[in-house]
Image 1 (spheres, rainbow, N blue to C red):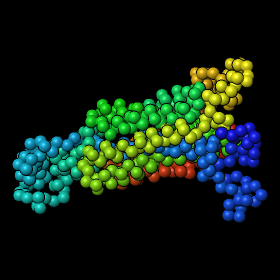
Image 2 (image 1 turned 90 degrees about the vertical axis):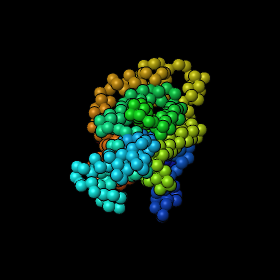
Image 3 (image 1 turned 180 degrees about the horizontal axis):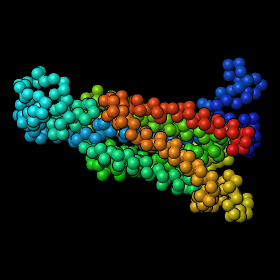
Image 4 (image 1 turned 120 degrees about the horizontal axis):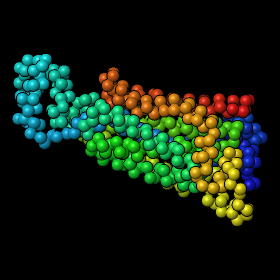
Length: 421
């Protein structure tokens, strides 16, 4: 952590960094013969480290948060029952079995004696039958085979709604908590604690279990608040909009990345010889592992703010100064909080600007969450795409965050520079 001697060196104002992507070079020592030095990849403590851990932690949270939707084509399939009588060589779903003949009777004359005579369309009808599909644990394709937990369309919609509901609660509470105990403790605890429901997602066997797990996974959405708080205390007002927007945008990028990556991971599992059930469960296991590792990095290798960690700062303050007057002005002025978490929530809720931003955010980011949760399955159903292709197509929506939010933050800084808004 810096000492006071470093706080106002070139590129910093009162300990806060006044640049993100580039900064003016000292004595002409810029990159590629320019007068500017590229600094985005700087990971030095406290500023660079906090920025990169913040956006990556948010990115990892988003991947785990939206890891399930791109696999929903498989998860919604019926449970396998390959040992059932109807799946046996002479069972109802065999070549000449009674259920097979019933499937074909509607559109075809059942005059087939072996599989070589079946057309692809007939084969698809068998693979999609609610009974016979349970006999095919390796069959890929939308609506074909088995290996899921057997979800209805209405159940998928409910689980998608629940999967974003928890973030509404945690985002209200986690900001004051971070004000109280510091960003580092709060972020580390969130990442480590909520990696648990991420691991449990790979064990669900019922619709009810899926809903419960997705609710608790949605609590990782609180990472957005901590990410924004962290970059706010690390960067000066002339660039804080760009820093906030870039860290948030690259974090949101995880939603698009999840849609693209999870399908590819699933396909790799399938190519390795796994059944549908094994493949989707193992695919869900790596995002929470990344979350857990990131939480440990945040705890051991980062700082709350340029001036140290909140606990140490409060201890030094108590030793050198008389108790501060608790009038709320410290929170409104952006200083480090003096008292408990509830006051910061009260101050924010009493400001009308908070509710204006609430509405703007609800109709922008709120829509993004809904789209991320539904777009992969929609593309697979509406355009008859494979699970992987549906997720890849849907990922393009979230991948725009790689530049769109940074652009909005840059515009915010320019508005602030000229009009103070």
